[in-house]
Length: 46
Image (cartoon, rainbow, N blue to C red):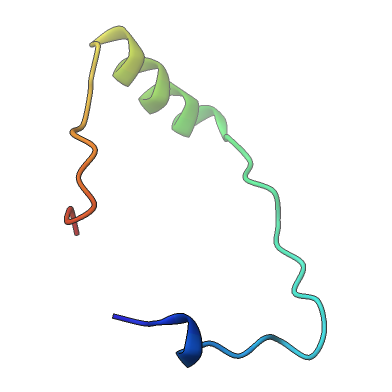
């Protein structure tokens, strides 16, 4: 596991792309909502 002291900042900014929900991905998301899918909030899920 990493700790804060193990991390070093980047010299320059790192630009991240915004998430784009493509149509096929949106079908999966909609199905999860329709099926009332839930996942336990457990930080040890890996």
